[in-house]
Image 1: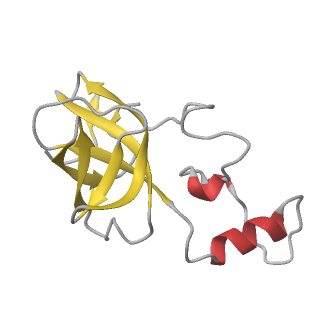
Image 2 (image 1 turned 45 degrees about the vertical axis):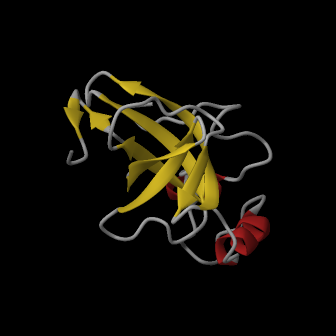
Image 3 (image 1 turned 60 degrees about the vertical axis):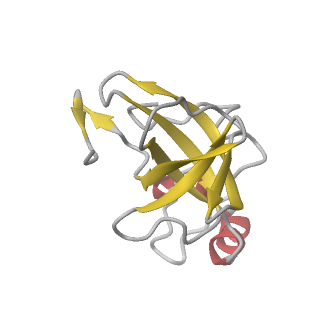
Length: 139
């Protein structure tokens, strides 16, 4: 989780494409005339404004982020955590979530996660939390 690696069956499966699993970088769109199995379907997904974004979450306070907890924006449900747990390196709870487009701006963003019926603040961050033993995000 800290390294930003998806878990098959939890963060991705056969019902979720690479664009909604944070794996869009693996799709070789160029050259434009390059054809591959599934290109047309992926192109439709890429243009779909309802496509969900795969983001990282960093809990701002105490608690533990877990799979299937709702992600909220101003109290409104916008997604769900796919994987979550405690980061020993960051000493905070972290998670992957699939959320509505636009929740994460260029510099990050904020949201809430519903934990035991209570909305707890969290930061929307990149999905790679730690690389080579060092934090990749500002705390």
